Image (cartoon, rainbow, N blue to C red):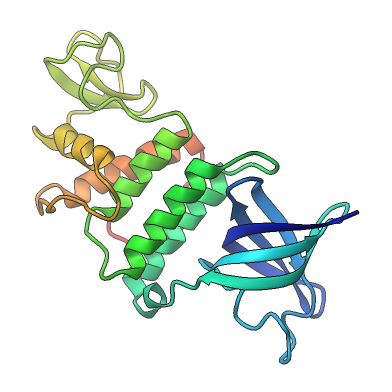
Length: 239
């Protein structure tokens, strides 16, 4: 048993006992943290609103056998602005849900943490770019090692006659490698997705209204296929 310092972004929380909460966070150095905040549901809790979902906090933890206990918490980034708009809340919830699905306990998660932090900062800075979620999902796929092939065939590597897209195969396929179940994408869509995959979350290129919905749908279904779970937070969007 020991006292240690850490930091993390709150992914979710749920009631525990009569007055406590289990708080799940993403730490850059220790991956998914499962902690308990004692007495947080009481009116006079010393933690106040500092452990709300999406908050980036600095922690002092008392190590336990199953759950570490939060003894001190200080706010680093509250991300207040994103909470004032439903679209931004939905986008932030999708980002934290993906991070929660990907992160492992006791594993360094610097890239995933920085990706989530950049995504929340982009949402906090103003109305969300129409392609922000798509870009985040593509970058999340890269972080977990399943980035889709978008500019060359996932089967043979050729760069021409790319006519189909396959989730199991890992991206676009040429005419010679096309498999049952692979489906056709409109011309230009894979290039649009490739541009988003390479872009910075805070400086996305102008959106093309003709591709926004389809691009997000492809990115979502690709990530869901490889995570083997649905991203429930996106269910409210028409994707």
